[in-house]
Image: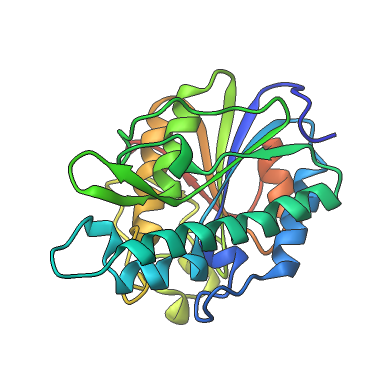
Length: 262
């Protein structure tokens, strides 16, 4: 049963582009959410789930430049509240799906406990006895009043600061891992099975909507997690079997991220 600690903790990121349709405002991919929730119900590992925003956060955050903080002459207060409300709606889909599959989970909206952006944000990391769920959010910030706290920065902190973390799993949509070229041009041979920061790749970043860095940020944070001695794997979250295998530490198609050229 998910939530009983039987040999360590696994921190898993459900990418925003995986659980929502990024080109359709506030539209969930319910099938994928259910598949992920069911996968998480089949492990005895203690889980921390960090989910992205996708179409529930990025579009509005981009339009009102929320990642830049307070901007004179731009009416942003309503957008801050709208994005927080939208993220709570998305989170409810996640929580309802976990409950449907018998997973004991509790959600901790970051705007209630975190302050500041980037990997050095302030706030004690909340942890539930069962499955802990957090997500990217608009949080208060001492320097710029507010900003976007990325789920990739949150997963870095959980993976490196909680005891007994065995691995971090990044589940993304549409691709099997980090590719040498953008997905539209990629062949199966373009999958990078082991990636380190010295290895360049031509990432695709939806800069028109994404406010938190895309695949490049995931790779960078994954390398930081790996440097702490924790296994990191980036997988196709649309393949439930791979999600389960990755959580359990079994061999799986994807990209293993290491901290150096070794």
